[in-house]
Length: 150
Image (tube, rainbow, N blue to C red; front, side, top):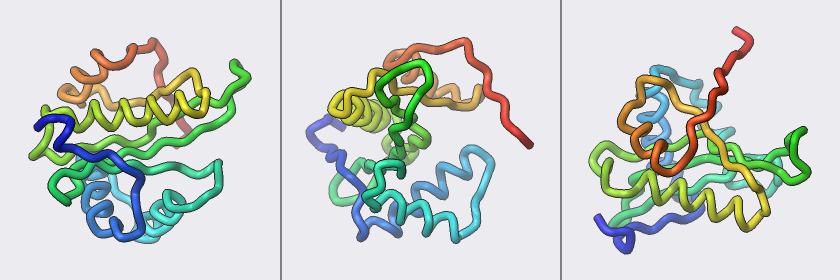
């Protein structure tokens, strides 16, 4: 698939069902799930206008959603400018390796540049070998290890 066959755009209200299917597949890949109320809440936030809420982009091919990403700008103690956290990134297995993931990340990079955010960062699990091949080409692996409260 060429990049010209792909349209990356903000998520719209009429994307809900397709977005849910993609996000559910993403969560399943990471061996987790959320309550149905979280789908509604997250989608409403993606459509909202609060600058503290997440933004959502989708990749569309031939009128079908084939990928998504969620990102948020936030303050950082080590920088004056906001930074950008790319929380979720998913490409449908049928289009993996065709540039969807790269296009979504580059779209987030462009949004960060437009907001003067000097850093875009994300995490993945160590077993996500396929995606990490892309991440190694488009980003820099850092030495940080994530901890969280139970």
